[in-house]
Image (cartoon, rainbow, N blue to C red; front, side):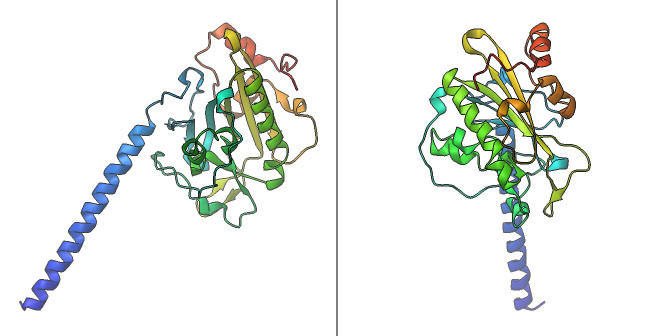
Length: 268
């Protein structure tokens, strides 16, 4: 065999070795990220986390989520919004990034490109302005769902602002939100990201140890109706999603709270 051929073979082997090592390193890094995401963070109020129908809960520093691979989005995103979290600081909007902590791989942001839908935040960036890191963490693709712009910027935005009002008034609330995911939904992109026909938001207030809850269910379209028109019982949202929202509450308290759609002890 000629020297030239030998050198070529050696060069190929070196390239293969470099590629294999790089792949191994990235795989190890990915595994560490996934394992880190499985650990509840100190800012996570784990007591109020819902159940997961997917078995894939990811804990980020400032919110947790349950990722649904068949629908390529979170079935719920949950976080505590304290009065101290509220800020008017305007951070520079970052690019969206794929959430590497999702072991089945979160959908790419390109699925939304030219789809006609916003990359709708589930944990709003506006709820995490207290630091740039917290703000930027909301731009992971596991935290978005396809939303019509008029809905995202309209009635859904009104509800998000009202949640901030309650967080300030009650010195914090716990929020769970997501789309109603079911078979047969329209999809966008190569990864077939589902477009929910309805979105929900469940809010829990634990001021002075006295718990109250409020649930909203909205069709995926803008509306001028007052927000209280969208109030439903938590039980209704549970029937649609299969999620148990507050499993750690004592059963009699949980059953009473979740069966009610009374909003009169909340200020609208």
